[in-house]
Length: 399
Ligand SMILES: Cc1cc2nc3c(=O)[nH]c(=O)nc-3n(C[C@H](O)[C@H](O)[C@H](O)COP(=O)(O)OP(=O)(O)OC[C@H]3O[C@@H](n4cnc5c(N)ncnc54)[C@H](O)[C@@H]3O)c2cc1C
Image (tube, rainbow, N blue to C red):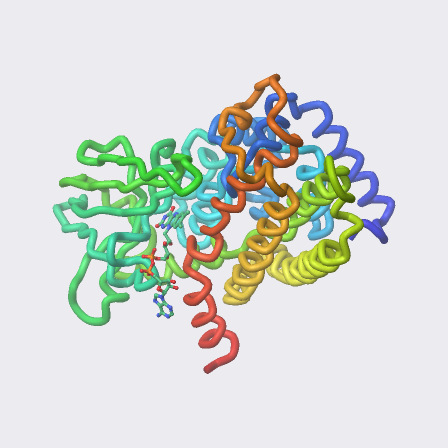
């Protein structure tokens, strides 16, 4: 991407670079450096989103009429690369990458007019209420029920693995509105205000000791029918459409970021022996992963071209998701191996934003193990790799 930029794109790159230099404060960069999962801490993420929003850059992938930037494919890539280079915090995907595009595709005019500006500004933070105990891969088995009561539904049931529900004031959720016919046909898609009486959020702490996940309980929760997206009992179409956006991310940018950190670590000379950069096994695996990241980048550009033309990502997002998960987890593994014995040091306090005491071992090492642990989720969340392979088999290969 870097090699043949037109003069206009070079100017664009400089504009982005200047903006990032002026707006990224040291606490924001520190937070980005210390991110140990795909999700940034909420404070830094929202501060950064508001800065981008003021500039009109919060949602480059959205159509211009809803607040997108109108940038070309190349410009969007340049922007993503520059953000990583300048150590910008990551944005929370549930609002901008998932709910927004879903509303643009399926929302009523009123829903778009109300929610899209609030998503861009960060006034609303969304979480995703799909999975339930007993309904993960087999999502259509979900049982959280929405019973009709005049102009409202009364919702009862539970959702699980709800990322960032503790920060969200809105949830997009799948609920059962009928038990007749095929199980996919009795599902509706609701937008639920998390402050409605009857909603309880309970934390689930993950393998890295971090609170990102929750179980959410609904007890006689009243939701207006005006908050249904799509027709009653046709929520499955909306859900699948949204999943295509969820499963597509510019994963290669994240891979490049992690590979860059590993390279920096590998160049350090250990107390005994030689740097990893002189180790043939390390160099072979590093080169392989770099090539795979480049291959992924090329495939992502094809999907971005679809998005530019106003089309959803399509089922190919499932094959990219598999590739992204597998390469990311191998990159993490190489990161842990490169850290060597510092991988066994437990120092969560080193990840505090703004901490000025040096960590034990190199600075780049402190995120490697938490990142490795956290990214196990990449082959589970949003549909496990086995389920994505089933989709590729059916929807792409026609098997
Ligand atoms: C970190 C994280 C964040 C998440 N965030 C959210 C969120 O915000 N909102 C939300 O709604 N959900 C969220 N999820 C839930 C996620 O979507 C589910 O975990 C996922 O769909 C798998 O469902 P399950 O955990 O119930 O596993 P199961 O469905 O019980 O699957 C267990 C195993 O069986 C395999 N399997 C199941 N069925 C098949 C099949 N037909 N063919 C082949 N293999 C199969 C699976 O691949 C898996 O290996 C999150 C999950 C994680 C790990």
